[in-house]
Length: 388
Ligand code: FE
Ligand code: MN
Image 1 (cartoon, rainbow, N blue to C red):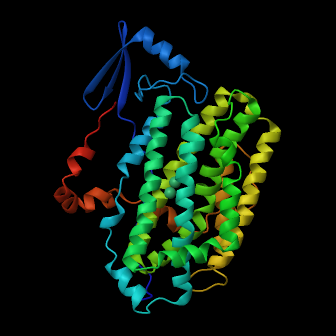
Image 2: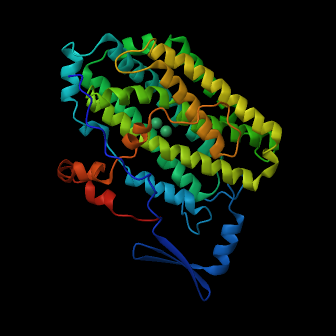
Image 3: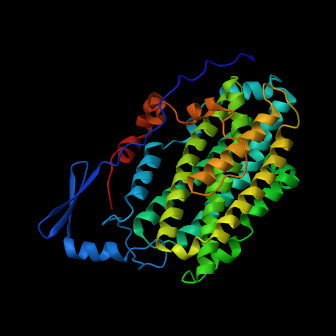
C-alpha cells in the first residue's frame, strides 16, 4: 500500500508546440495561414488596427477577432491551453473512495487531502472572479482577452474538479467550508490576495500611472504569487501522495490542474511584460521593490499554511523541503520577470514534480480517454481549430 510508485520516466523540458500559423505579405494583403485556412486582410487597414492595439487603454471593439495578431504569444498560449484540455468528471475515483473509506489513509494523509479541498474550493473561485473583473475587463486587445477568457474557463474546470472530489468521497460540503473558512493561514492568504481587488473591479482610470501599477500588481499577485507560488506547496504534498499510490484520482486532477497553472503563470508573465513595455513609467525601482515585498509577504503566509498542512515530518514528506519549495518557486517567478530573488534556495527540492506536471505526450487526456469521449459526441467539435 505504501510502496513508492514507479517514477515517471524523465522527459525533456516541455517546449511548447510552435504556433502553427504563418503571416506573409501579398501585394496589398497581409495573409495569415492556420492549418490550411487562409485569412486575407487588407494590409493598410490591418497595419492601422495592429498599431492601435494596446494591452490597456486601446480601442475597444465588440468583435473578439484576434486578427491581425499583435500579441502572437497570447494566441500560442491559448493553443497550448486548449491542447491540455481535460474534464474532471470522467476521472476514476473508485480507488480513492476505497482508500478514503477503508481507513487505509493515515490521519496526516487525510488532513492533506482535506486541506487541498478546503483551500482550493475558495482559491479557484477567487482566481476566476479576479481574472474576470480585475484583469479581463481592463484588457483591450482582442487576442489578449481571448486567451484570458480561456484561462477563466479553466478556473471553472478546476472548481468542477473539486466538486467531483467532494461528491465522490461523500465529503460534507458545509462541514468542509465551515472548518476551512476559520483556519487563520487560509484566511490570511485569501485576504492578502484580494486586498486590492474591489478597487480594480470598479473600473479604475488606467491612463493614470499609479492605477496602472495597481493593475500590474494584481496581475503579478494572481499569477506569480498566488498561482505561481502559493498553489505549489499543497499541490506538491498531494502529488507526493499520488506518487505513493494514494488518492490517485485526486492526484490526477491536481496534476492536470497544476499543468494548467503553468500556462496561467506564463500568460500572466507575458501580459505583464507587454504592459510594461507599452507603459514603461510603471516599472520604477520603487515599484519593482514593491512587487518583491508583496512576494515576500506571500511567501511568509504560504509557509504558515505549509506548516498547518504538514505540522511535522511524516507520511514520506519532510516539512523543510516544502518550505524550501516555496522559496524556490517565489524566486523563479521573480527572476523570470527580471526581479531580484529573495532567498538562497536555488535548487528544486522536488525535481520529480516537474516531470509529473508536464505529462508525457502519451498521457494526453484525450488520447487516454478517447473511447469515453467519442461516445459523448463532443470530441470532433473540440478537435477542430477554428479562428474567429
Ligand atoms: Fe486554477
Ligand atoms: Mn489558474
